[in-house]
Image (cartoon, rainbow, N blue to C red; front, side, top):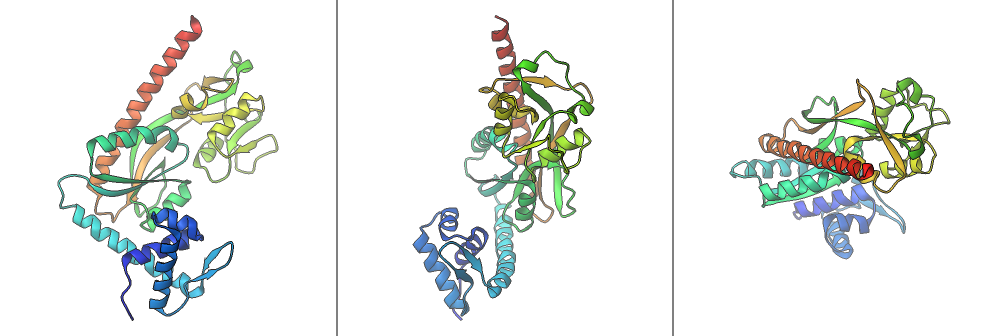
Length: 314
């Protein structure tokens, strides 16, 4: 049997993950024909087909599923070997794969990218935005180095580093601006708009209202915070959003904001990584940059809020 390369195994993993040659090629930053050639050569080397191909879908064969498990272990070991080599450097450099949940990514990532780029010019950032369960799976499989999520995740194999906490803000139609701020009991009686199933922020909002995921008809789901805020602006209901999302999501919607009295609903944001990751010390440096970036963003948002209030009073 001829040797096969780590590059071919990475292409195999990408195709197994995406189930589509075009998307896998895009993820690997190569052309689709080049990916097809590499997969075909890997199959010839192993002596059997790894994928069933159809016009619309590519799926693993039974043998391919067994190979996929072995490939994940091989690639994770190769990545950890590369990480050990990076430990000999006196600065953080090379590839760093960071996952971020959707209720953080649009608001905090621009600041994080700028700060990390300024501090570590040799860093090659690879960013992944998806839901917490997917981030946990990809982190466990070695496809991510670290992830920024809401804590706790309570996975014994992960290190959790708390970074900051932020309050939830009530968004309601402009006409409701002078109404009293509802408490958790009152919210349960209102048409509450929430993110769809799978978002941890949905579960946190339900927890504040002491509600379960078995929702009554009065509650509606949305795919993003932007959708929820626009629905509120149209008079459909009310929603909760994290503090960092306020300047971005409410600037073009006819809504009013209200902050809850203590104890306010909030969430704890942190970074997680595998306990076995040899870059733990470097990841703690990255975590500190994320924490400082969040402070910078919070101060900037506070200044914008004060400015908006001053314009409204003039």
